[in-house]
Amino acid sequence: MEKANWSSPVAGFIILGLSDHPGLEKIFFVLILLMYLMILLGNGVLILVTILDSRLHTPMYFFLGNLSFLDICYTTSSVPLVLDGFLTPRKTISFSACAVQMFFSFAMAGTECVLLGMMAFDRYVAICNPLRYPVVMSKAAYVPMAVSSWAIGGTASVVHTSLTIQLPFCGNNVINHLACEILAVLRLACVDISINVISMGVTNVIFLGVPVLFISISYVFIIATILRIPSAEGRRKAFSTCSAHLTIVVVFYGTILFMYGKPKSKDPQGADKQEISDKLTYLFCGVVTPMLNPIIYSLRNKDVKAAVRNLVLHKHFIQ
Image (cartoon, rainbow, N blue to C red):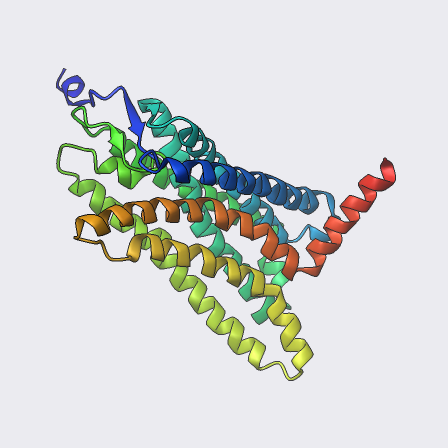
């Protein structure tokens, strides 16, 4: 009985979005819709070529296929809701739908952090220990590595989503955000959220600190190995195999650090501008980064470009 009284009386949430700035809503609806379609197309093509082209049946492209699928899932978990919010001022979402959206967004973000670390290890072995690469990165190794990335991200999301939905909100149901972002929902709770804050801090260390440290150490060894290659052409080829992954890491983690690491404004006018900035940064992290991933890999990788070209020519030939 006590548990029932402790549950949240909120049946649903109102997503504020950009309703205070109707002019921006129309602009961003068109912009985000186009970007979302590009994400579906670009990442969908990457998944297709990594499956159909036998030359891409390697650990690196297996991880890339997982990353593309993850980006599609991540954006699909939030972008349709954001677009609907641009058309419907003060969009209402049910409590359960908000919980589902929080779970998938958090799970996909956590999985990507771990997956980028796995991809860094793959590049480390390929460049620093090329003779042992077929043994170390066998199918028996890289498939469980990818599966564990999804499992770790999903488990962390279950924990945080469960801790969040158990909180009482006491009728305060207006989310000042574009979607059901977990930190924005936590601000609505009318009880002490110390446990949530501590668990979120531990998760940040696990999903941000540890992968960044691991990736940084991997690239120190990678760069040291590349610099020891005597020919300029050899160095260029070696660096080209990891430059796309390094670019994605910088964009992904740079956006997260910018989003959560910037100082908070105490001035009321500054706080209002910062709220808009936070929402637009959330859009950047949620849309622009997944859109850039297939572009970066397509521009910087001859194998992917050749596979896409063969796919298009094969389709044209069949027609």
